[in-house]
Amino acid sequence: MRLPARIILGTLSSTLLLFNVAGYEHVAEASGAVDRADLTITAAGSSFAAPIFNKWRETYRPSNAAVGLSYDSVGSGEGIKRFLAGTVDIGATDAPVATDDIQVEGGPVVQIPVTAGMIAIAYNLPDISGPLNLPRDVYADIFLGNISRWDDPRIEAANPGIGLPTKLIQVVARSDSSGTTFAFTNHLAAISPTWADGPGVGKLIDWPGGAMVARGNEGVAQRIKLTLGSIGYVEAGFASRLGLPLAWLENRAGGFVAPTAETGQRALAGGSDAIPDDLSVVITDPEGARSYPIVTYTWALLRSEYRDSETAVAIDALLRWMLTDGQADADPLGYVPLPDNVTRAALAQMQRDGL
Image 1 (cartoon, rainbow, N blue to C red):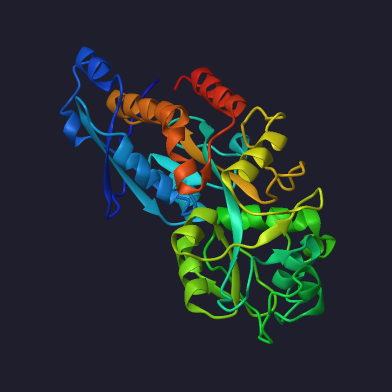
Image 2: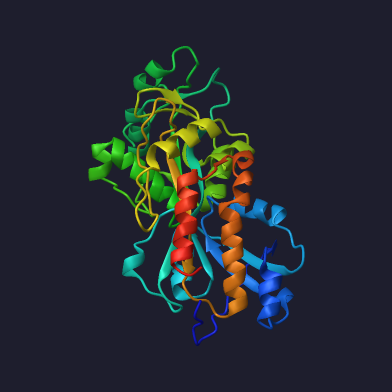
């Protein structure tokens, strides 16, 4: 890679993650590298992907040389902002960017999918006697504010005999600029013309009906856990780790499915055959009888050039590991391993862009 003239100083977050960079020692020695222990890669963005980044910290350990990575879980919108401002080396986002329309110091922007997952609808109804089924028109209308009570006849019709309470529904949503919100509202717009014409699609939404708001996936999950009668959208792994029940959602084929490894993989497989050149595939309403209806990728935003050869080699090795061996960490955390054709396309994109 060519190197930019200016050294971009990374903003360090409070948590330092140590990674081994495979093949880094050999290249660094050949180029007369500086002390490798002092090299820090900075990244910020998606709270959706924060748990798998933390797991990658544990599984991608130093063997010959240590490289620090700071990851700040600030939401996709802020992650994009920091990346474009040059204060971090990597931006992580669940909402793809139009790479042809932006330029940063260090050359064109490269956008690589690194993980995928499901957006669950979690709820806090401790006294009901079974899983909650939510038809497509029902959960769209809940978030539109058109259904405001748990004993609404449309919810009861899909859930006979489970003992729904005569209680107001309290919607919990994101307060920050969020790729999770982007993916969720993209799905709502695909299944509800009213949503498409009303709140619409975006990383930051003016929620109808007086929703409670919280910051980050972790904030939404915690608010749901603390609020009886609440419902909200959150990365499936966050909700599961807090013990929140997850609704079974009606998919495009008319079946009710839970967010599981199998249903998430089926959703990605149904939408991953037509991958655009910039790898910004967005699956708004996947096909398939067993597909979970709300899935998203998380992308890493990279520069074609970095501040020095050591940083460039370290980032290259880290991304290649995430796309291959690192995918083994997805399933245990509630994420979905990337389909093989997506991984191949991502590696080919890195090769074409000199990464």
